[in-house]
Every structure is written in C-alpha cells, then in structure tokens.
Length: 297
Ligand code: G3H
Ligand code: ZN
Image 1 (spheres, rainbow, N blue to C red):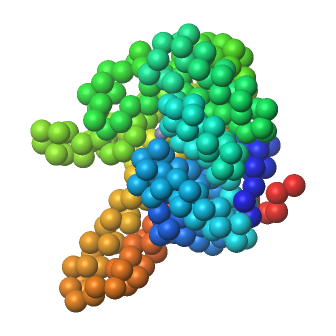
Image 2: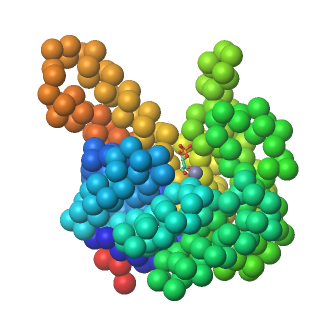
C-alpha cells in the first residue's frame, strides 16, 4: 500500500532497523523493488532522481510507482531524491510525494537554510516531509576530494543548528560515503576501499546532537558491517541506487551473452529484474527491515 513516509520512518525504528530508499527509473526497477519488499515483508521507500523523471517522464514514472505501490502488500512511501528546484518540488508534492529532498548543500550554510526553510514552509502546509543535506555527499567523480574531504563532512554542532533553523524532517549526513562506485578515471580501477571509510565516530556525534531521522546516502558499496553499525547508531534511511543498477546490468549482459538469439525485451529484461530483486532483498535483510512491513498503524 502507498503510505506517507511518516508511517514507516519514525522514532520507534531508530537503532533497531532502517528503511531502504531504493532509486527507480522505470517499470522493471520498480517491480523488482516491490517484489523484494513483498518477499521480505518489508516497508521500503521508492525514490526518484531528477534524472529518472527526465528519462521516463515525470507523470509516467510517478504513475508506475503509485500503481505498483498501491497494489503492494507492504507499506511503500514515495520520496523525491536530490532536487535543487523548488518549482519541481511543488509539482511533485502536488503529484502525491509524501517526502522531498531539497539539496542545497552546494550553497553556503546561510543560503542552504534560506532555501530549505522556503521548501519546508510549503511542504509542511501540505503534510509533506522535507529532507535536506548538510556537508557534501560527493559523487564518484569527486573521489580524490573524498579522500581528503574532512571539511566536506557534516559537523555535528552545525547539524543541530541546521535542523532547528530549518525544521526539516530528515537529514542527509555526509560522513564519508559517496554516490556511485568510485573509479580511478586514469586506471579505471574500482576504488571500493574509498567507500569503506564511513566516519562512524562522526555519525555517533551527529546522532547525539540531532534527534530527527538521519539518512545515509551513497550506501552502495559500503561494507555490511559498517551499514549494520550505522543502523545501530540510528541511521533510519539508507539510499541505495548503484548496487541495484550493477545487479541489473550484470544479469542483463549475462543473459544476452548466453542467449544470443533472444530479441523479446520481456525475455531480455526479466532475469535482470530478478537480479535486482535479489540485490534489494539482500539490502533489506542487512537493514533488518524484513518482516517489519505490517499494516501501518
Ligand atoms: O541519492 C541516492 C543515493 O545516495 C545513491 O547512492 O548509488 O551509491 O547507492 P548509491
Ligand atoms: Zn544521494
């Protein structure tokens, strides 16, 4: 069932289990995520990036997600990921999103607060949650910066101030994770070790100061034991995109290599959707969200 994010993310889950926020771009990814949630009887967030809305069409993708979520036997919330554009946020709120991320982390602290407060005021009047980001969660193209990027990370005291000045509902924290898979552009070597340095003390310090649910972005590629620690430390939402894409992509290529003569997209895509479902189920289990998808209270 399609539910408000507040039905599945709340203080009761903090430290016990966490909710995966899976990115989707199309029908197959959406169905793979929903099947995983149903198989694991888990609540999940399905989220869209601006790029996914542009790729699939906003109304088309949102309709697919809403229909799949409404049919699902577990609670599913719809969230907009990383958005810099207040006008687009207004459109998405009117389309039924129960949570939106205004990502103004590239601005100065003051400008971030200013824009975030405008979005919070509009969203809260409509019962919609707002996520904002403090510190910089970089992309794999910034992997060198991440190596030394202490100053890019979220400062616990500033985080407490930011939350009270903006009245946001969830906070995306920069504690060393990064989007995507860090690859050295020269050697093309995957730098997974870079994703192994979540600053867990910093996360604990933020948790002590910030009482709203924390969100860890860039969770793909972060070692399971760090994810589990972050769940215990009180991260309530884990954003996962790349690991689903990699699972989908690997299965698709294997399928095409094995079956050179197939040409029916349904036969080409089905094994990839299954692989994505398996990966999403793995993530659900690591977050201890299995069997937490009872009817929302
Ligand atoms: O906003 C989306 C997530 O932060 C995706 O990160 O691709 O590393 O899983 P990921
Ligand atoms: Zn992100």
